[in-house]
Length: 436
Picture (cartoon, rainbow, N blue to C red):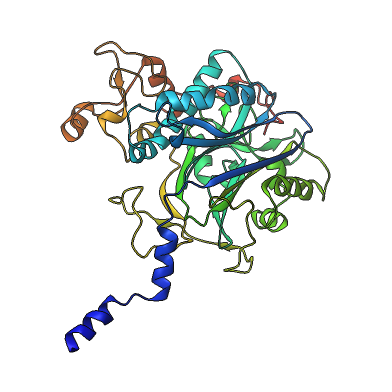
């Protein structure tokens, strides 16, 4: 009898654990993804891409569809933003090998996004387009959200419990000292506008050109130190879902992240986007293109987000729960908290050679006879390894790749400061002022 009682006690599971199990058992069910956008235009240089069903991971299988939502905030013209909107997604798909499992697809996606951003920038420069654009590019595959960003448009997530998570980086010189040091090391100058006979004014800018961003697509006249290599973050939501807000600097110059969430909480995505834009232009009027995309990731059949109850709507800046490297993307721990947002990947390094290999340097993740950036077919022996010591890498990893074609290799060398950019003294330092 004593042994039976002990066994019964051991088999007793706390009510809280049972509730967690009930929630997490539904995790594999696909969420509903609803979106809304709002925009007020002053220059006509903001563009968006809203694709609830962008493509299929497995050709012809609707159950493998994923969503794409992107914001392109152009400067010094709209050409770069229009070009990136038209070509970036197709470049992501080209950079992603076929025949991958979902776990492999998600793991290689950050590398594919880096390659696609660089290829889009390289192709844009080939057509001599001198404008530039920020990009915030969001891919949603079931409960996994991957965000790639360059520039100062920002993306945030509010989880179901009302916690705030940052999914993008700010590449303004004023807010990113590391980028100031990188650009200076490449041979460019970073400083405020120097008015002859007066004090320095305005935000920090890169000279030549006068751009206040360290990363963008385009901006060929500023030099190679302004790079298209994106910050990438990948997270996994609980099946309680969450809300994503993507907005241009026209919003964030006048609203904090907390203010944007507060004024839109509890409203459907389309109304929420309008409320954020209206709130942003209220203090000073319409001073810049002001665009907002709101995306709700909801449990199936839940038509609108409910106001958070766990924290009574209080904004809490939370650290991500980091994923153990040995865990599968589909694995849920037995006692997982239902509202935890799990960080799967993050990398903001400017070093292209690092970004093309970190975490997924498996030979089958690349086409060994193609350039890792532009997918140009390479003859045997024609490709240039991205590694400083290819033979040593081959001993460790079994191959010398990934490989680049000559023109992509030259671009990599320039972006990493191994080839000097435009001589600042030979350029018109004021030719680009007013951008971004």
